[in-house]
Image (cartoon, rainbow, N blue to C red; front, side, top):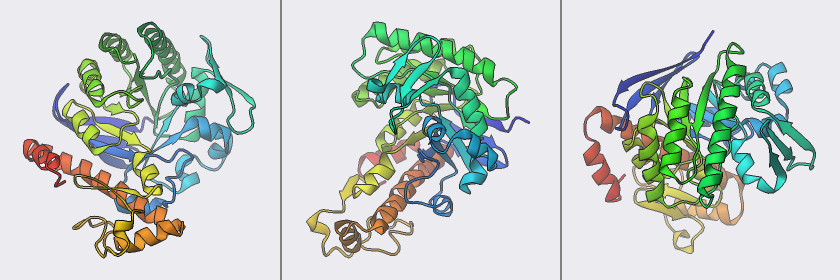
Length: 369
């Protein structure tokens, strides 16, 4: 039984949109931010804490889960939801980003990718068909096909070749996916930093009729203006009644600009990684809690914030925890950052619903959201 459906409630092809992801027994409002739990756990937080900060869907990485503990074990133990105790939505990335980030440890050919495991150096060869099977065995609700991600400095010729291979692999992934399970396979748009290459890839992907679409290969070192230009060249060409997912983008200002251009879904390691480094989101920017200026500061991270951290602890105490490298420091900062970002996106939804988005943008840019 197919357990995924997207309902577009408001908006069009290149304007702010409201929608709902229907996943198993859950309804997830969009735009939505998805915390990242690469190894099937959002670092330092329990599933209950994720629910409390407002998370409804999280992202894990099929490549890493394939290496450890292995999709066969996850399937044997009831699938990813039962294995982790997380009853919300699960999206798995394919490992395509590892093709980019582990460039010194892989070889690409037409059939697939050969990796050198970052764990023990063992050889691992994955085809698009393998990845679909792995993600289906894991039991994710939304799965991503194997793709080829390129960097910001990639030549146009290489970016087009990567996009062409991504399209070829998408077709093979779709053939392997049809009839294999009840999850949703998204197509991924690549094309480097070149609007015409991106537009061509988007049109090709759109014609394959995936349940949803992702824009990959951004937030890889390019300037923000270039990211927005490429979104404008890409997003309107994707089917308007399908969800659009911008991969790996998690700064509030980037999310807002992408929503304005018709994007529905976001993920990033940024809020959790920054939290572990002692950097937390606040209206107008960020605080670095390790700084000496907070040594005697009795205020919460953010006045008016309703997260567990802000309603119970001071900046001074959090700074002390970070200085002592107490695990609690990382947990409390992560709770705040995820609560902040998920709440930020919910405020965008409310502004779209209430036709007050222009006022929200003005308030955000003045540093008060």
